[in-house]
Image 1 (spheres, each protein chain N blue to C red):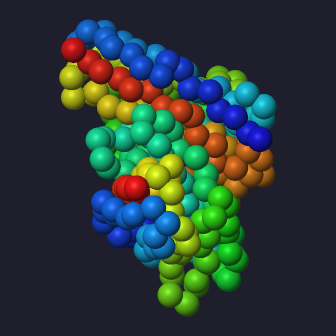
Image 2 (cartoon, rainbow over the protein chains, first blue to last red):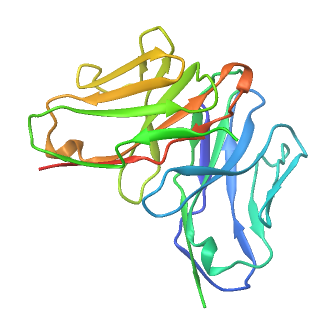
Amino acid sequence: GDSVTQMEGPVTLSEEAFLTINCTYTATGYPSLFWYVQYPGEGLQLLLKATKADDKGSNKGFEATYRKETTSFHLEKGSVQVSDSAVYFCALSDTGTASKLTFGTGTRLQVTL
Amino acid sequence: GAVVSQHPSRVICKSGTSVKIECRSLDFQATTMFWYRQFPKQSLMLMATSNEGSKATYEQGVEKDKFLINHASLTLSTLTVTSAHPEDSSFYICSARGPTGVGGYTFGSGTRLTVV
């Protein structure tokens, strides 16, 4: 079945540092890929997505590229801020209009001054 | 953009009682809703998928008689935790998806359930 593997956290960075959170996936079809962010005590917010190979999703300085050859969708940001501290989830959905999301385990990011 | 409202945000109930959590899509018709459970510092576990007007499809290991899901309209789905026990304490999150991808996957803000 489908699965998503994320790097374990927590990841602790100083403000303005470069961020990479690795994500790889296994899927039988041609999935769409997502990054969601969860702030403490809240639900999930879509951060960015990519629906086909070589697509790059970007939002709020974050970006991730759909790499079919390496089955990866790594999240990057050039300069993190304290306000980026949250838990980040990589996810995929199978083709189809009502397919469920399969999540990775989440990576906690802590950014310090 | 698409908005999903989940209510209540926090609830404390006594062991043995039932609790209902509502999930509403405010500006789109949600043909499919998903209910997740999240344990502390862990990922989301899909509990069930519900399509408007039909019975929910539960994931393996989820007790359908304990976690009652109703999706009677295109804008409302409810999760009722029946005869709650302390081990049911958790963070429950709903997600809604419209027809042909309208609304994408939009998440509610979650409900923190504490059973005492």
